[in-house]
Image (cartoon, rainbow over all chains, first blue to last red; front, side, top):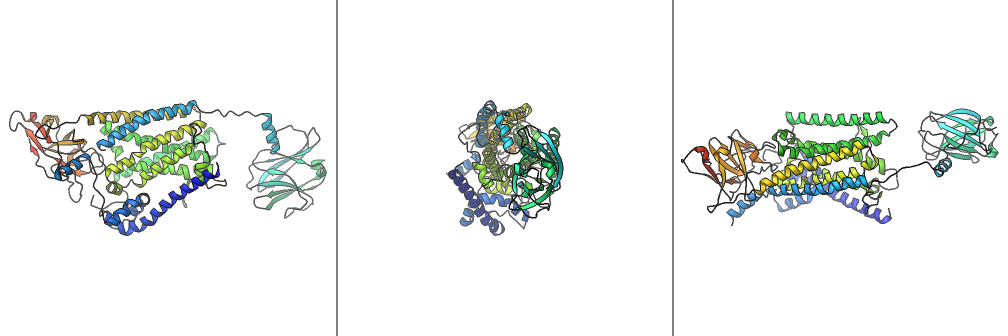
Amino acid sequence: MDGVGVAIAETLIKIVRGYLFAGLVFSVPFVIFGIQRVDPSVKGWNVLFRVLILPGLSVFWPLFAVRLVRGKRHPVERTAHRLAAQSASHP
Amino acid sequence: MILSRRQVHFYSFVGLGIILPIVFIAGLALRPNYDMQATDAATDLFAQAGFATGEDGEAISSDSFTVARVPIAAETLRLTDGSVVLDLTPKKSLPVVDVLVYWDAGSEAPEALGDEAVLLGNLAGDARRRFEIPAELQGQSGQLVFYSQAQSQVVTAAPFAAEMTQ
Amino acid sequence: MSVGYKSIQWNRQKLIYDLILWASVAAYIAIFMAVTKGIDSNLDIRGVQIRAYGSAAFLLLHVILSIGPLSRLSPKFHPLLFNRRHMGVTMFFLALIHVVGLNLPGLPLKTTGALTWYHDFGNLDPLVSLFVGNSHYGDFIQFPFEILGVGALAIFFVMAATSHDFWLVNLTAPIWKALHMGVYVAYGLLVGHVVLGALQSNRHPAMTVAVGVGLVWIVGLHLLAGSREIKQDKATLSPSDDGFVDVGTVAEIPDNRAKVVTISGERVAVFKYDGKISAVSNVCQHQNGPLGEGKVIDGCITCPWHGYQYLPDCGASPPPFTERIPTFDVRLAGDGQGPVEDQRIFVRAIPNAPGTHVDPAVI
């Protein structure tokens, strides 16, 4: 393949690696210190649990960064019945 | 699953049910043929690469060496056109990278490759490889030097008697 | 969920399940290697290993994708569903070994991956070579089938990385499920990966038939189960002038079980227990499992998928758990009139906020 193709492939790989690495840089301190503020169900010092969620955090880290900054917890699911109940109580 | 996910599930599989059979059938129907036949051109290429594929001439002599613990059978032949060749058949692949075979003068195994050494060809794999012996070396005793190009060092050298090429 | 997360929720059954799973995978790979070696001892061991792990992952994907529709068709398959996520994570690791090999210090099993075997030893980074080695992106039959595999592996990675219950809570179950429905895309990509890859060089009819049968099985099973669900969902009940929906008679519901009907855009589970009737949203908050297909056990509605529990009259999980689902007002028509079993059940179409207490209708 030509040099352009190689350059495109190299750039894309660098972008993906950079995103995941940035995720890891955010996630390691987050999983130790910040996680309980976003999800109070995280209790105690279960190291294996925190290691297990690290790969996923490295992918979805912007979501948790936003929640941490805004001081929000995880949302409740949106289903047809929950939405209907909500609109009935707050017309 | 909630209702909308059940709809997505069903219509995803309607889509897959249409696309995948087409991919499957087209993938089999359009499968290219890679039938290969050994042509004369291929034979020439093998000969150029040093594989002993052509005629077997009149045997002159035979010997055996050990290179990096691999036994190698050596046989010299005189072909019908008068040229003299050396056939080497390693018992298995040499565990050394980029092996070149040189002829060098002298009766002692050399530590390094001499300036006057003559390159005969490269040796790899366990196929029978053929090396042409130049006319001026025929009937001369010397050393067969096995040299690793990648490691820039002599792997081993074995005496190559004058009788082998006479 | 409010009792803290565990790293891996192993109990006796799940451990047995996993041990059987891993033993089967190990046996498959060992048999694959032995049989291939028996057929032709000249084959390179590394090429055989790559095929062993790749085919093991593809086969396991067929098993995983069969469990869902099978347990919709018959509750007998629910035990398989219980621990399906461990199967998925195992499958991801098999696919990963197929690509990058296995070379852990201290582990006797060493395997070369396809990335090293087909893309190393050149002047390009193997990962770059993977994307540019075959540039026939505009062609069908010559299309770089490796890229299809890369896409599937990326989806499996995201799924495996988010398989912990932490992700169900933090992404919410409907979004988590949408993400994990990416497995259908991954399956499609893998069929392409196999048809344009392995099937091109391996022309043995058995291999072609196996892939074809797998395709018909998976797509057929999902279409069968999916069309049943769609049909049930389309039978939506509409409320009368007073806002209540007639859902049938008391006699239709077995004790401690539910009747499932579609009201207000989702299914409602109407339970009969202890001579009472209660109605809740059919959607379990854990993984959106079908509560109406579960039973009332120890006074709690118990989800058939992973055993999450809710009190029927208020839709809340018993403490210390904190899940809450919407409830529905219920009433019986013909109070005290005629045979009890013929009483009709009416459910209000507008749900109450999750966890709202509703007096059960007494039969």
